[in-house]
Structures are given as C-alpha cells and as structure tokens.
Image 1: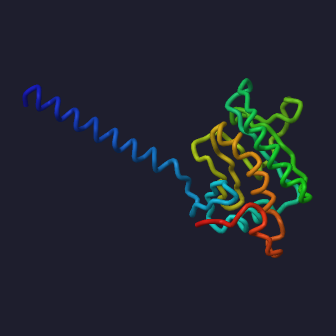
Image 2: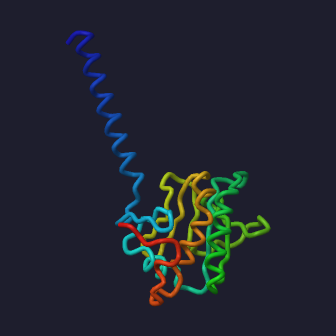
Image 3: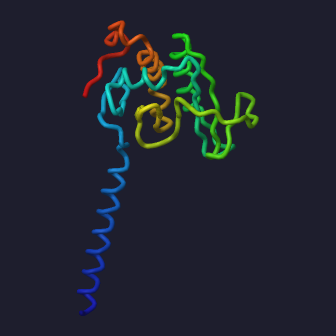
Length: 181
C-alpha cells in the first residue's frame, strides 16, 4: 500500500466516524418521550396526550420545582423566569409550589441561597438542547436554551395551568390551543 492509498483509507475512516457520531448526536437530541405536540406554541414531548400526562404528573397539591445550575456561581435568570411563570400558573389553581435550586447535582439551595435538604422534584428546569417540555410518566422536565426560556416563559405558565385544570371540564381548547400530533 502506498502513501496515497493509506491516506485515502484514513480519510474514509475519519469520515465514517464523523458521520456515525453526528447520527448518534442527532438521535440523542430527541428524548425518549413518545410523541411530539405543540400546545400554545410550546413544544411538548410526551408518552401520552399532554394534558392528561401533565395532570397526572402534577396531581399532588404540594409540588416542588428544581432550577438546575451547573455550579454555585452560574447565573440562571431565564430559568428563574420560567420557574416564576410556571409557579404562577400552578399557584393560581390552588397548588402549593416550593422552588429549590439544584447546584452541580450535589446539593440544593432555598430562597436565601443556603443549603437545604433536596426534596424530590415534580418539575425540573434545566439547560439543554430540547427547547421543550418533556413528560415521561411522573417526571416533567423543562429543557431549553436561555433564549428559549426567556421567549417561552409566559407560554409555560399557560401550559402548566392548562395541564392541571380539571380535565373533565372540557376546557382544553380554552388555554392556549389544542395539541397537534
């Protein structure tokens, strides 16, 4: 094998590895949630119909929201904005919502930024590439970029309020649009 053949083979191998990694990366962007919906302008990935899935996941009167930060010095204003809107939407329907910061996957902080015992979350707000609300069973994750969190915060309030309203009331179309599958 001469130098050119060896170089051609190396280029082919490198291209194949890059294509494989790109395909793996793209596949990992879509979480394992079953279907994709758009509700009130918000992309929702859910195993089932989004309103019923949200209602089931947030059935408790006492709810906890985690705002995820990579470390204690990370500023998370847009995640806080999204959390504030979500809490507003849930609170106006009688839910008692506590918010904690989850720092570096190690500990939680309360409103005074002092460490507190981590309570199991009902909603997790975290940075990521999904730009969506992901509902997998009892787990609700709001994942997106800062720009998406800022833009979608009011829509998230309406989505969460819509999700916990009495499903039997038949008012699904009144709170931000119907789901599109």
